[in-house]
Image (cartoon, rainbow, N blue to C red; front, side):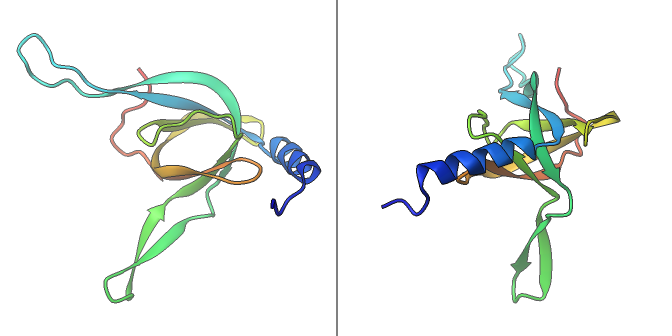
Length: 136
């Protein structure tokens, strides 16, 4: 037995779609290859189409480490996406617009773990990418 009626899900998903005020692109992970000398080449990322998203940079998630006296950040931000978004945990997310305004420099995040599916959309934990690798 479903806890939510079909009409409730439709309404929740419509509300979710209207609250995605930011724009992002999935940077799809492409594994590295080896060069002609057998040396490994780094992975790359292919920039996808612009999609609506909801970035929450205040929603950091923390975890207690050891005896509970140390807090370690699991995520720098939380992202909401439409249910039909294809995302791999090795992909990256490039935030290009916040609240309808283009960012001078896009923010690039790594996906932390597997996206969580909720009744109205996907929830993705993000960590700011610091290695300088964006899309090719």
